[in-house]
Amino acid sequence: MKKVISTLSVLLLTLLIAACGSSEKETSNDDQVTDSKNNSEANGSEEKENSSEATGTSVDSDNQEYSISVLDGYELTAEEPNKDLLFNKENEEQSMRIEVYNASEVNMADVTNELVETVKASNSEGNVTEITDNSIVPSGKQIEDVKSYKAEIPDGNNVYGYTFLQDGLGVKLTVFDTAESPAIEDFIKMANTIKIN
Image: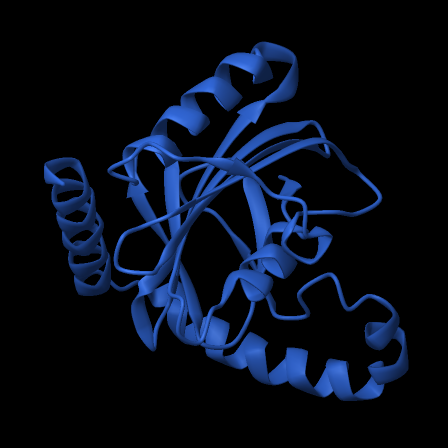
């Protein structure tokens, strides 16, 4: 129980600190979102075919060497060195920690083992299950070697963990989601768009 409380406390503090910072890039992103909406309407039928990918604004990480399409209502911010946080502006309990590695310089088995331990720590009983529902697993042309895990937190919320290779990157994601109005499918759509810079 102590681990759960400390994990949630760290998450909430991280979100609070992240919310305090803002950048000039946010202002320009508002214009890009408007442009993106106009382009989305023009290419509506094409986007319906790619419903597994986000059609938001492309944002470059200031902290790591990748870009991601961020949906309206979400924000990408640097959490700490080599870790970013993508969070729901309307619900601070919904977030996705993103860590990327050069695929040729990392042992993904070690990254996956570390991820499983992180997901396990979020559950007082240490129960972690492999995800079998493909709608909440990253997929795409360049996504390979996906490992996906889930732990239910005693309050009914969920923690998801993913590792995969994509576009020359080793990717590790930790998603914190709520049971009420879950956002996991949005996070997966955005994860599908991660690309190396």
